[in-house]
Length: 306
Image 1: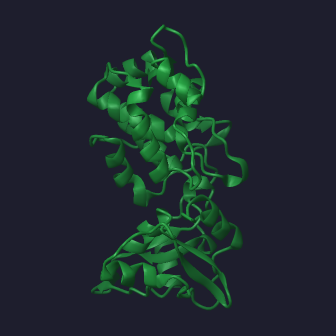
Image 2 (image 1 turned 180 degrees about the vertical axis):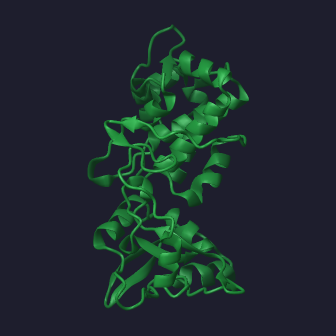
Image 3 (image 1 turned 90 degrees about the vertical axis):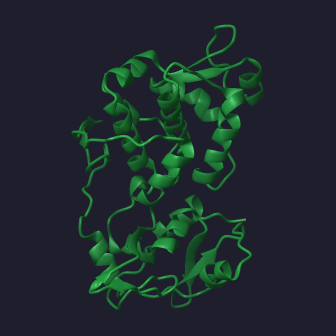
């Protein structure tokens, strides 16, 4: 069984480019718990709060429930659910999952593979992270689900629905990453954060500046200047977490700050709240600004509006 290919082909609701990371989050959580207790199961009533917190933190902006992935992941052949009476999953009803003692775990064949080939767990983790979340969140999300560090070799590209792997862990993607995208984006913004203007360097090399995708690469966001911003490390992280966003304004774009952001100190005011309504810096003349479609995707799928 090609478990990497199966994990790469998770069936998800994808209408209009919407994010639906429910199954990947549950699978990452299950892999972490397998590391801790390979023979244990995840009783819905015991893990519901953990899964709900993960969805609130790393899922789409709208409210959702962990009951959906707990039940529907069964259909992807990686996960099984049994009740206290030995039956299968009772469905997506929260009350039914709780009262039936519904317990999920990785399917026996996958558990056997992970025991026989310990490196496979790391490969699955890297595939899920790369396919569904931006790099700025990988380490934080790994910690959040409780994953222990693993040594992860780069897998061989596979065929998925007739398409060759894009690059690295981007199974099924149609184009390769641009290794010069950071250099191109930083140059387009004169090596200055588009939100705050930070322009630090160490000698002749920029430091603390990153190329941020507006529409995430995992969701068909291209390595292109009209889908990228030069941001400092702090504002890149806040942009990917939905604390910061952007909207069209006269002459270009301006910064949005989530009304859900809370920070009472002076530093939080200076570095975050005072950015609200500030015009973006750059890009240089002749360089395309962020395309409307990519900006709108971020505002709908990442930015935490009221």
